[in-house]
Image (tube, rainbow, N blue to C red; front, side):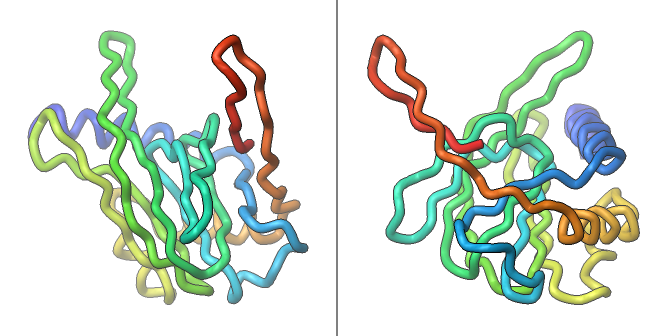
Length: 176
């Protein structure tokens, strides 16, 4: 791995650790009451999640969703992902990448950036469906991710809300 790639991984890791230290905030992308963890999929991103498109549905543009959890019903989705690297000396934004995800009930999807070259990134996913799968998460302690998932499912599990913001060019629809 190049120095730039290691630096990016370190920056992403620091962001993830900040998220792990706080509460396990996330959004539920279905409107009926919270379902048991065995009936839903949980997506944890260690990059930026800018949007989610469910099969046959319009894209939901998201705001402020770096290092967050998204709870989805099983099905086919497209995640709109972006890697953002920031330091005291450099701000670098990677291009948005669409990632198709077939979300299965009871699975946790850990999405993180890989750096095949110093100037490019791509999303990588660990599909966690058993205790052993937590050990596949690179550069993380399995227990910290397990605890975060447990905290999320024991918390309030807020529903994503649609917000329409009028601008001089029309209305922007965002989900928070």
